[in-house]
Image (cartoon, helix red, strand yellow):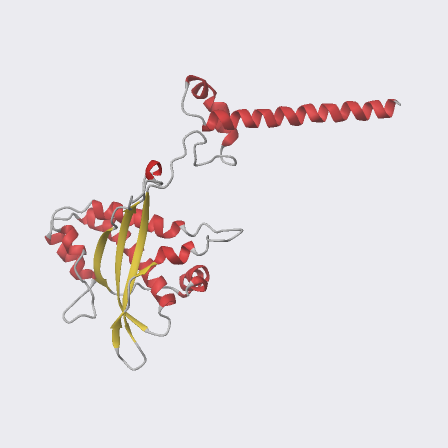
Length: 253
């Protein structure tokens, strides 16, 4: 009898502890995700320490903010086939390939964020260009073109348009990331050809506002493009090539 009572006491004590832990977690989640108030601010040191880094969320349970704009990255290439014939491909939205890794997948990956992040990174650098500097990067700078020196021509043109050395370095960091992304994708998209040059474009397109989604005849805003010039394909190491292709190449249709 005493053994049964002891077991009952242990079970009840365990239940009380579990309920206390769950209640604390639910209350912490509520205060952490709630709109700012005097109560949530006062409890912030405790709730933040509990929620981060394991339980933190990037959404608000009271006022969800759906994606208001689609960010896309586009690539096309000038290619040369085995007979030496050069041609220009159609534009390809790289986000379409990554979105296939999410659509109808029980365990979707987060690779869909890659083109979104690249778009944001480049757009920020492009927006820092002033005057004729944007026109410079929209022009072609390809070493294989007659008399062209590629990167050197681009750098000289930006200096001539008034860009500082530090500003050029910051911009080229973003452009290099964009064109490396495009080069890697192009190698998977057109594998049986030689890449001669790469052209990139970013775009944004707003979505129909949530409150207007059921209004007949409402259309999405037109897509806004930033077309850049042709560049030489970016150098790619074998290790980087294998890693990118394992994520991207298998989803190219």
